[in-house]
Amino acid sequence: MTQSAILFWMRRDLRLSDHEGLSQAAQTGRPVIPVFIHDEAVDGLGAAPKWRMGLAVSHFQEVLQGIGSDLVLRRGPALDVLKELIAETGAGAVWWSRGYDPASIARDTAVKSSLKAQGVAAHSFAGHVLFEPWSVQTKTGGYYKVFTPMWKAVRGRDLAPCVPAVRALPAPSHWPASEDISTWGMGAGMQRGMRILSKHVVVGEAAAQARLAEFIDLALPEYALARDQMGIRGTSMLSENLTYGEISPRMCFHAGRMSLSMGQSGAEVFLKELVWRDFAYHLAFHTPHIISENWRAEWDAFPWNTDETTPEVVAWTQGRTGVHLVDAAMRELYVTGYMHNRGRMIVASYLTKHLMTHWKIGQAWFAQCLLDWDPASNAMGWQWSAGCGPDASPYFRVFNPDTQAEKFDPDRRYRARYLAQAYADCGEEARDYFRAIPASWGLSFEDAYPPQPIVGLAQGRQRALEAYKTRG
Image 1 (cartoon, rainbow, N blue to C red):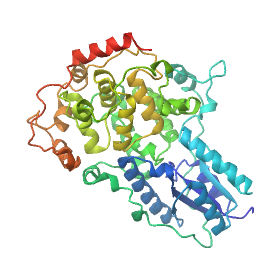
Image 2 (cartoon, one colour; image 1 turned 90 degrees about the vertical axis):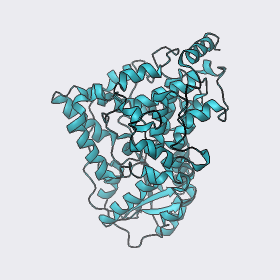
Image 3 (cartoon, rainbow, N blue to C red; image 1 turned 135 degrees about the vertical axis):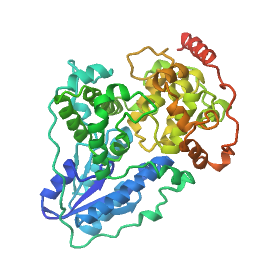
Image 4 (cartoon, rainbow, N blue to C red; image 1 turned 180 degrees about the vertical axis):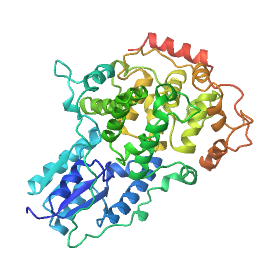
């Protein structure tokens, strides 16, 4: 068994650099068979993230083939597929990188238990976080419920250096059969939007590392302020690549720390954003209900609208609320599969507060449309915006989109880029919105823009504040 093959179950860790588990597998000298399984977790992805996952898997398969290895593709329940491959290959071990959301934990726990009962070694490695959830504790031994104290606890903590890139993997004498990813229909839900979003995706490890290097060199010096300016490219855009493990958070963190040591003031804000991502997974691990239920139970009786078919919610999803910044952000989502972080806060606040609609409806929409969809970050972000999540700020904070526009899009560059009809100098992206949306919406570039907001900003804010007074 010591020389039997290792099945390495790839998930959201599709890279060769700084890959702890894959590196250790290579060093054993045993045959290593990388495997990707289209299981229930993959099947349940929304349209955009499923398509993007397919691109990541296809690219990584080519990368592995380039170093004399391969990526075996199979479809079905993870445990069943792994057992089939063990029988076919005689593999004596299954290794993988850990997940920290409740669904991944439940699946992986069941897989590990069953494999060990079968006499197969099952071993997991640190996954897609900087600090594993149980490794960061308060002085009383609990977990952090507020971000700033967690940041202070880890900001100076030693972080192991990145693991050198895997250059070769010992191959088995015979490769098991692999399915063709083109038969999986990973992009089936994208319809005509696929052609538009294809202009914006940045796929693979090499592209992710280039994106990081460009950000460090060009954008990091001004990051502290530029990250909120919606009309310029002031953010790293690495969330897309972090989602699929095409780059590790540790590589990003070390790059930021090096810049900080060289006097780049924006680097600390970048490091905080990486730890904020960790914070989401720590909460998902310690309080798994955050993924699907109000983090604060006192919000369970709050009178949110739960009907996604109301005219107001439909207008929000289509970017036709009549509030320029909200609509521009929603259209950016449809054109690029991404939304500026400031925009995410604004559209979430507008939906949950001005429109008094449940955050779960927004969470589900983002899960369909975001290329960088992440279960923990998406859930925490929506609950943070709605006021029912982990936030030291008052729950009655209500963003005013017009004030936000004056501050973060003062030259209207962002709104004009994505919002057709309302701006004579609208960009090509504004037209791409109409090329990307479902034809069933019946919208065209010639349609008039809504003459006024579906809910006035002052009216919506007052309605929300009145509801907060009587919340359970």
